Length: 80
Image 1 (spheres, rainbow, N blue to C red):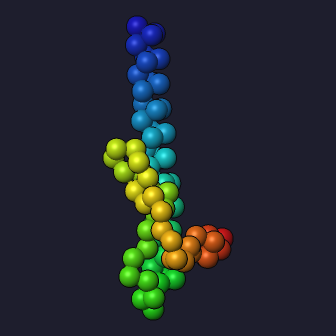
Image 2: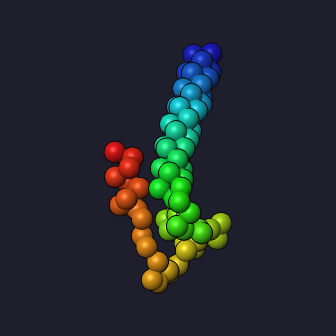
């Protein structure tokens, strides 16, 4: 009986932690998205790519891009 209560408590705590994690992650993603949209308000870029993205097969979504601006540092500075 005590083991079942402990197990239920653990499962509830893990679910709550996961919910909190997702909520915080979504806040960060929303802030990054807003910063990128603000940065690109003038429409200088046709496409902004997350170079750290990974495809479903585990390969990087973007393998190599030559001659294009990397705006990462600018976006990070906007978020601070």
